[in-house]
Amino acid sequence: MLFTDARFAIFFVLCFAVYWLLSRNAHRHHFLLVMSYVFYAAWDYRFLALIIYASAVAFIAAKLISASDDVGRRRKILFVAVGLELASLFFFKYFGFVFENISAFSGVLFQTPDWSIPDILLPVGISFFTFQAISYIVDVARGDTRPSSNPLDVALYIAFFPQLVAGPIVRSTDFMPQLAEQKVLNWDGFIQGAAVFLLGFCYKAAIADNLALVVDPVYGAPEDWSRLSLWVATLAFHSQIYFDFAGYSWMAIGVALMLGFKLPANFNYPYIARNIRDFWQRWHISLSTWLRDYLYIPLGGSRHGGGRFVFAAMVTMILGGIWHGASWNFVLWGLLHGVAILAYRYRALIPGFGARRRGSPLIGLIFGVAITQVWVLLLWIPFRADTFADTTYIVSAMFGGSTANGEKGYPVWMLLMVVLPVLVDAAAGLKVDKLRAMRPGTPFVYGLVAGAAFALMLVLLPLDSSPFIYFRF
Image (cartoon, rainbow, N blue to C red; front, side, top):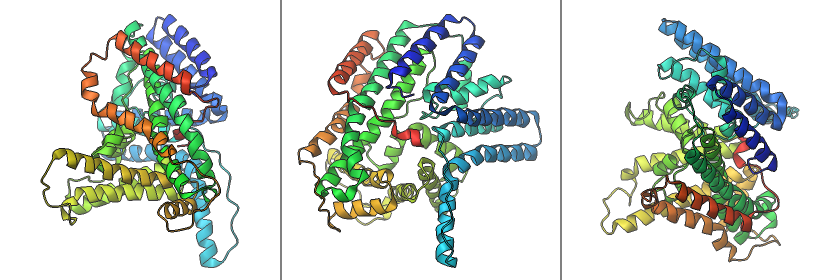
């Protein structure tokens, strides 16, 4: 059930009406949990058991941890519980990848025939609700969150439908206290949520889905297209993935606001980032901060010298790449982003970058944004390509290392068309402080945003909608 489907409109109107007609918090939470399970069952009801499993493990582990004063026992329970949460993620998402690589390695080393690779269906959103379950367990173990005495509250935290299948990843420290609040229907909040939802809808349906019409044919058969077309498609995907994922995040935030819940912002104009560190503070913020707090810092971070920093940063970025998918393309994507973070950290040691530059700060800013976005753009190639072979072909063809003489091609003017949405968004990002100062909390301003988004959708909405990119993660 896509947010852009008519089915979701019917689903949400029913959910919204019944939710606010109920007077008691407990009844509202129970109803939201049922509707969240209905929402997920619309994808595949068989995988509801996975969400219930993740919720049960999180609830039981938190209760056992909080009931014990023995530090060693608490640690053992934590490791077992996190292992159980990761076990289901590994089986459904990574078992086939590991099996395939073991089979290939065995064939090369021992000349054995290829093994039959099991076909395992990937449950939508499994990475997101697994990470939320883990964060609840860890937060309770750290003392950041009090364990809930109600398993249904934990289940709702993990299964809350607006962000269930593609985030933002919500911390228990942010969500659980909201369950204790007595909510009242606030029409200003409703208008704000509706405007944010429409903005996200516009990002996704009017921009990202139209860019998908440019990207998908080229990346589906890159050898059939010209070199210029590969550049057009890659630039288009640079725009598409941002508007697709940011659009989903804004829609999720808007739906939650209309139900009285606040979800964290997931994007902050990442394509105006001045450096790679700044980029990861603006892109998929809920994941990058999750990896920082639950992986990078526990691995030592930057507190124990340069060697530990290199280890923690590279492990975090590689695992962050693997989180997105089970393929060598994502390993490469995470690895190279890790290399970029190390290069930025130790830029003083790089010839030409270490000396303090003189001249206009504006030139330095433009140079920083340009080099960051070129790096990000190029790394979207392995992220989007179907296979590692496609990645190597596309990169080689784009830079003239191989013959790209496909019969199909896009005109030159398409280069401007596919980057124009990002340029407009980046311009808004550069003026974001001024925009926020214009009393954006008033219903009038949100009404203008909603009206502009709706008008743009009427003009640009494609006939067919595409699934959200991050649904496969």
